[in-house]
Image (cartoon, rainbow, N blue to C red; front, side, top):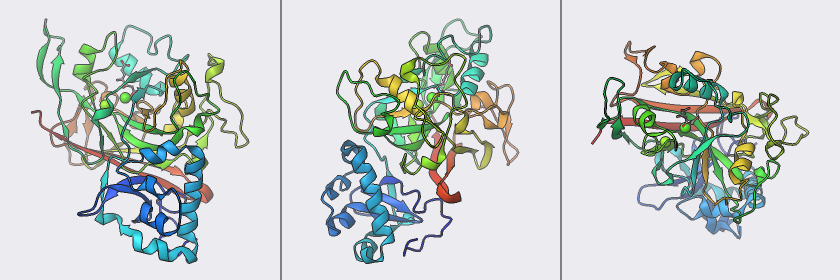
Length: 409
Ligand SMILES: O=C(O)/C=C/C(=O)CC(=O)CC(=O)O
Ligand SMILES: [Ca+2]
Ligand SMILES: [Mg+2]
């Protein structure tokens, strides 16, 4: 219970407590936590309460806090819960609460390295069928390793940032040579982003079992994708300009601690079993150290919910992606971000991209206003939302990830 006026069933209740970077008019961006429809300005509250490390929160990003590592993150969560529930702390909390309606949210993390995986079997199979109709839907390596590519960290933007339609080379099937111009197959990818902290030294891999030491939290992530640019450029070195123009993330980083009740076993990895370095260990809750997450998404296109991708159907786990990403000795840096890959479930209305939903443009999607869509048009707005089960029947919100398409320049 809390003395604060937060409804017991708020998806931003005390079970959630996500971190973000906010500002109010005329003030500098700094770290806050959200509780109900309020934001707690953490640094001044912690300073007044006599907390030693309050300065990590007086920063325009979460990176200093991320650098502190798992023991500090867990202690901070306990401290925040204590000050919000203990009436004796009211004096150092109340002056530092701001209504969420009065704040501007900023990019929560100064993104270090950005990697994007491809962990949904349903998505990978769908895209394989669409892009490579004459081959097996999954490539031979797919069930042996979590496939990924390096993205462009400097173009990760916060929810609400407009997305300018990218221009580039594409080669229509009817043309002999490529043409240059605005993308005509602009798409979304509904993903979960993992925010990493507790940087490592070069040459020291992180095991599946130790991954929780580095997995700070999650954000909603939209990997905007220009399918026509991508199809022409990406063999054999992978996605480049077709995806590097913008990636949107939600402003509130929901901690892995808050998502403990959402842990579920993976859907199954038996044929083939992964190599030992990708295998998790059993845990008491049955989810294992290579756990999946029970998070349900909503993809809204100009006000119509067109899909509900279920994260629990993902083949590879976040711990496996992290272990794979470092198994060659590559470092982790505070502020690293990796995407799960597009989340698609087995049903049509669970697909996480419009490429799949419209089956490469052949099956248009009808919106509530009667209009039809295959790919994104200028002025279109896409909102991703997601929720997860919290403890004791509560619900945890991951907030929103919004973007509107602006015409090419
Ligand atoms: O299979 C392909 O050729 C291409 C796949 C993608 O574009 C998806 C990608 O970015 C990874 C993902 O989001 O799952
Ligand atoms: Ca992607
Ligand atoms: Mg992208």
